[in-house]
Image 1 (cartoon, rainbow, N blue to C red):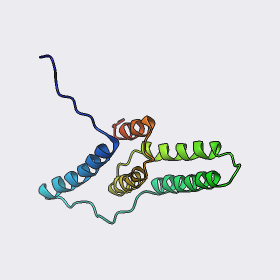
Image 2: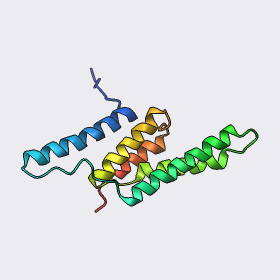
Image 3: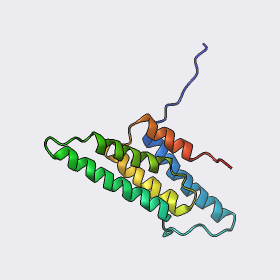
Image 4: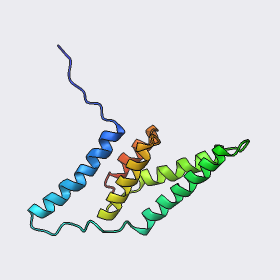
Length: 130
């Protein structure tokens, strides 16, 4: 008595369900007789810049780790800031949502989307601040 079931959601489940929301919104648009957004819609220039910045920071961090005697602390912080910028990006357009979800799933598959700050930034990015 007094017990209730709780649900634990992990990053993988959240990202999976976020992708499902994209599919559901497309299905809803089809059911309403509207044209679903094109699958080839490109992400915005701003999101492309954020992803490119993270890729560059990640490469610099990896290089610093491999260079013997190199201080990787600065590179690590820069890479983390770049990843948090992507997590926190409010992807409104179809192309941005797909690009953000695909990129974050790629990062998560490497086991690198693991800080509480990542999930907090992703969740905050989905809130409407109108």
